[in-house]
Amino acid sequence: MKPQPALGAEHHCRLCGGDLREVLDFGSQPVSNAFVKADEADEVPFFRLAVGLCTSCTMVQQLDEMPPHKMYRSDYPYRASGSLLIRKHFENVARHIVQTRPGGQNGFVVEIGSNDGVMLKTLSEAGIRHLGVDPAAGAADVAESHGVNVLTEFFDEKTAADIRKEHGPAHLIFSANTISHISYLDSIFRGVDSLLAPDGLFVFEDRWLGDILEHGFFDQIYDEHIYLFSVRSVQATAARFGFELVDVEHLALHGGSIRYTVARAGTRRPAAAVAEYLERERSQRVAEEATFVRFSAEIDRIRTDLLDLLRELRSDGRRVVGYGATSRSATVLNYCQIGPDLLPRVYDSTPEKQGCLTPGSKIPVCPSEAFADPYPDYALLFAWNHAEEIMAKECSFHEAGGRWILYVPTVHIV
Ligand SMILES: [Zn+2]
Image 1 (cartoon, protein in one colour):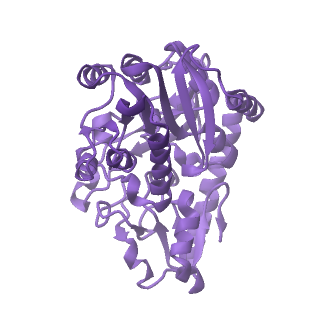
Image 2 (tube, protein in one colour; image 1 turned 135 degrees about the vertical axis):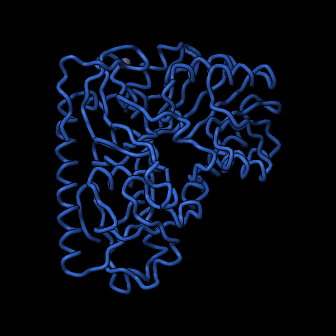
């Protein structure tokens, strides 16, 4: 991992125009969700995955980016409902909305990136006016089959204005694991500005840079995560668009996220948690280049250790497979250059990924039902954020003598 020298920086912050210092470079990486059949495997698009730190507003962001239409095709395979943990999380979010009724009886809730409708389904059942906005038609079809209203579009200023014209102002705009995926965040905030009621709230959940740096979760960095939010950078960005960060709540989900609550500036008193998390980030030094220098050395150590382990197991004749063909496995497999020679297959429960190859690394994806047929000696767990759920489900693997390999925060065997 050799970041480019900071001098002569050509990249500018997408939000404030400040200089971006390159701090991480993962080299050439594919579209992380491009699970395709063998005959299309050579057509998967690649780009340089490198991360910069804005010297002005501290927003951490990718230097280059994959065009959205290449990432979110109509066959985009991610389904939020796939995990029980995630399903429960969204049911809780929905229950809270149903109980608090933002905007009263006629309140209107918009979700940006509504995916398969896992959250809005409950709102729909409770008779709450709602609209999901999601460009992935496949997921939107599933949502609509559950009675969820969906607009199959990318959310931006124009879409926001159209929604406002048709439905009136939104009292809550919610989004989970989507806002950090959108390069034109400025247009999102302007859209929220035009759509949100005067006392409305914009609430979004995204992975937190503090957790990524603290726990070595380098594989949270892949094409879709254009921004790596910190409380400090979100606060600065909200302020640029006339908003104020009024609350933050840490969530264990996805290996550590924060739920950011944003209101129009001056309309609410910020909760104490905002100052607490700003202080915590100061002690973590999330906005300092030196922190990323250390982080990149940790990532290189993981790569070396993981490759050493996989090669050793192969020469011992052990059967090793991957478990969970996650988006983040793309960063691990391609950065470490692990292919079918070291990892002959990856098991996954998503039907859309089965029978396909992992992007770039070209490892066949098999249905997780076949994992036991017969059990391998070792399974490299890519879905480490669901480790407990998966290890409980696959307890007979461990009982049969199988061992899990984890690679964050360091490479270790469970
Ligand atoms: Zn900036």
